[in-house]
Image (cartoon, rainbow, N blue to C red; front, side):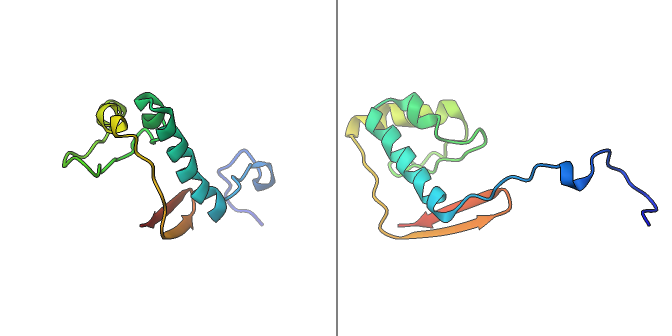
Length: 102
């Protein structure tokens, strides 16, 4: 017997997001690397979340919004960078994922 019920939607009517796979997490790097290939700082900056943080490799200034991330890539892309993953450690949680490594 249900004594108290707060939802107007029964659980079977709720869509549950499909968890991201480790392969999809690893694929996010490939999307970012392809953005580098465009040479367009806006394209690269758009790969970051709204609340994303970039700790750049050739600057000691953390970038914490779209404009500052784009500003960093305005000059960094002139070096024609390309990324390569040597070691990947993927962790997937509820509504988040991480790929940390070398």
